[in-house]
Length: 335
Image (cartoon, rainbow, N blue to C red):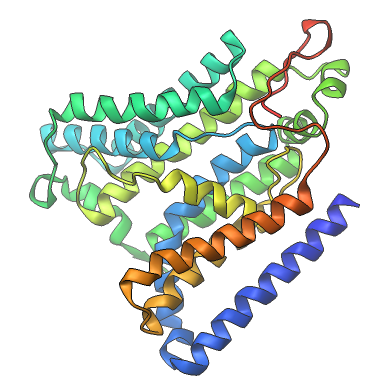
């Protein structure tokens, strides 16, 4: 039943996206060109990478509010190391970004599982802590275009087979996440844990291991996004991507990923990203005043999230609650 509802929702969301695109295209035909489509995809690629990590966390009834701070801190670390080490190569910088991001994500997972703290509280704390770490690492200074390593700037600006490199990175992450959730036992256990933590404990699923895994993966993808973000915009500073974590959560929920856990798909989440990308791309094209663009985009997202939350609401699930599973075998993530 949940699968059928998910399919219907995905088709409905796709229809809404197409309707918006056609309506804007009727007024401004340039919106429907291939080049504009590539621009929207390129602008949405980093969001798609972050959304895949956030989706894994939401499936366990958790939330990761530190993804944007992780992105900014990892981006700053890569920028500083690239500045100090001109000979750094693409593989080295990628491994560095993935490793630093995964470490920061693992800190979240450890705090949640070791001390049985609510994920929303832990990640809200690390959100601020990681921002503070950026200030300490950079001494409050910006790393600007002239100091960003050429490899870091060049990577997200390349084109492979006619598509921007950022789009290829996003497609690879989407594909790997889909395979992980569909074909790997760990992926199926994430759904089971989020759907019913107590039943998952009874069949031997270790909640702590799965929670550590999803928060580490979320952090790792945030680290990758940090490297790509700094490379694309050629800047690293303390407030980089501030508030972006809310857009990430919104894209997940718009795409049908339930904040109650256990429900969501890669396709739905990707459509949520596309929805936000189309809305953000449409407003400037139809010459909406910049003063209204953010308000309108926020209102559209808020309405979509509200409708989805009402549809997916389940009795007894609250994002702040955090209870241990029976007999201490496993603990649930936030409800």
